[in-house]
Image 1 (cartoon, rainbow, N blue to C red):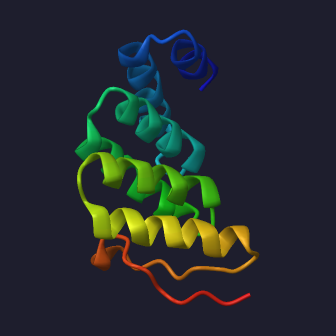
Image 2: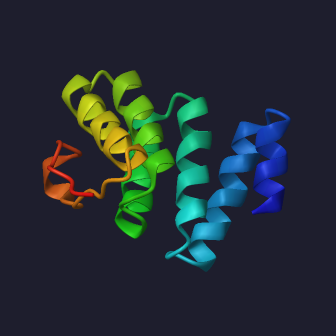
Length: 115
């Protein structure tokens, strides 16, 4: 993970993607690896791949505000406005201390959270 973060920090995005892919291949349950992979892909304008990685991160940690914020960015860049708004709403619910229910069948549409 450190190699990927280092590559990301100096703008070597393809190298970062390579490292982050290795991380998630070694541990498919590592949410931070999926999130980092998604962000590196996003910075490369590979939005579909970024969304897929972000959705995996959300499956592993559905109440992570940063994951939903990142997904919102990727959806927006991919011109998926409804999904971007729904992911952003989930990030806000979590930031207010609420919880969200994960339902990946709706591609990130909003669900009611509870505190």
